[in-house]
Length: 183
Image 1: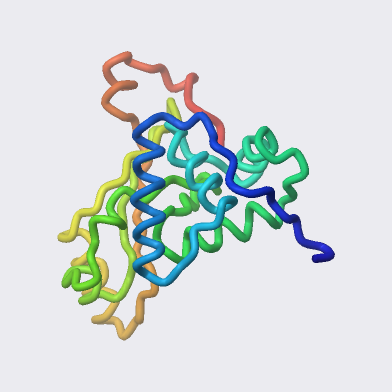
Image 2 (image 1 turned 180 degrees about the horizontal axis):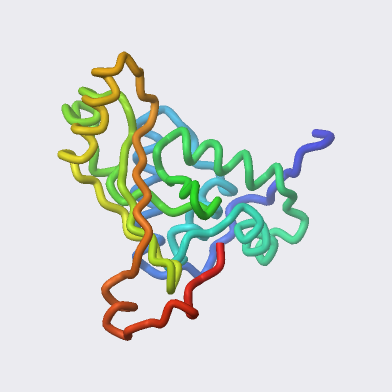
């Protein structure tokens, strides 16, 4: 296959047990959805889930190359595209980075909340000091935003809110403004 990076068969990676367990859940979920979690997709998702902070595409590529030295950017972008389409990760627009979705697998096929609005939605708290991102899924927030959009005749495809500030841990440490992460 000319022009495409062919990844070797699944290689075990030293992910923490909670990431490995999550990857197994995702593999089963993908199978149930008629989708395929390839070794590369699995590895990219594992890399994202194993990090405390969001990862950019080139950060992911760098980590992926530790396992597959010949990996190229399109390999990462294809895996990210699949993971986004399945709702298994989120793109944090403010950071141009990716985080795992913590509620997707809990949302079953007959989930009335997601089906009612027809969009994958979430809210994120982004710490300007340490760079950590916490995912929320507040139905009330999503409902108000989406209902307001519909009231304007707008057909939403996604509903993501990104809130920047200081996380509880950094606030407790009383981090100074000069310690903020530059975006």
